Image (tube, rainbow, N blue to C red; front, side):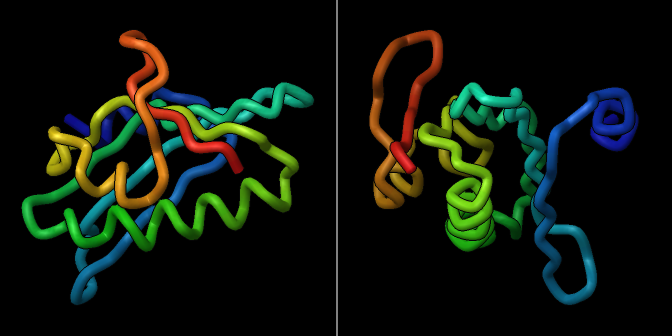
Length: 104
């Protein structure tokens, strides 16, 4: 199901994490030109992939700095429904529609 979905969405970029040669997590992002706002619009995280969230998003933040983004927005992620991992990475609740933001 996820493979079919990810093939139909036009991401500006994506990040995948592997564990022992197998996909552990996948994240898809949009970054409209000159907006400065990047949205994590899709994620698939396997049962063993929650430890991939922090290093994957750290790589994304580094890439977003190069792309001159100012904000990364996301909703809660599978495996981090309470938001503990995102909070530890510096995300904060801003609104109820888009749960967490990180200034870049």
